[in-house]
Amino acid sequence: MATPARYHGGMSESNTPDAQTLYEVMGGAERLRELVDRFYDLMQLEPEFAGIHAMHPQPNDSSRDKLFMFLSGWMGGPDLFVERYGHPRLRARHLPFAIGTKERDQWLRAMAWAMEDLGYDEALRMRLMQSFFNTADWMRNKAD
Image 1: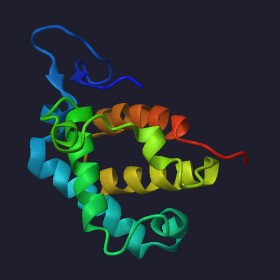
Image 2 (image 1 turned 135 degrees about the horizontal axis):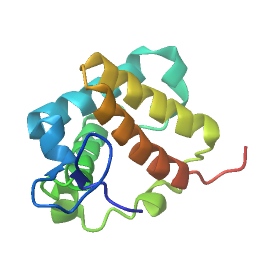
Image 3 (image 1 turned 90 degrees about the vertical axis):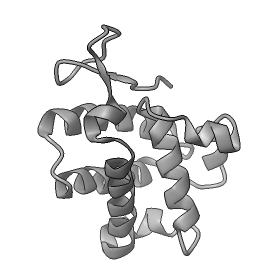
Image 4 (image 1 turned 180 degrees about the horizontal axis):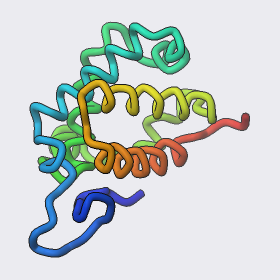
C-alpha cells in the first residue's frame, strides 16, 4: 500500500521540491483532527453507517485518536501512529472484523461526506478518495 505523501498540481503525486504533502495541503493537524472527528460523528449519527459504527468500541475516542495518528503519517505529516504503536499492519489489525464491499463503501461514504461538510476543494477530495478507495478496497477480507 503506497502512502499518498505528495500532492502537486491538484491531482497527481510528485517528488519535485515545490510539492506539498497531502497533510500540508489539507491544513495540518488541526484540519486533520476536524476530518477525523466529523467522520466519526457521521458514523454515530447516520443510520447508513450503522454497520461500520458497530465495529468500533464505544466510546470511540481511542479509534478517533488512532485514525488521526495513522492518517497524519499516511498523508506525509508526522508519523504519530508508527512512533506510538509501530508499523500499522492495517490489514492484520482489521482481520477480526468482517469487511466486505458494503463496509468498504460505508467507510468511503462517511469519509467523503466528512470532507464535503468541511469544505475540502474538489481536487483534494478526489485525490484523497482515490487513495482512500485503494486502501479501503485492500482491507476487504470477506466474500460478498
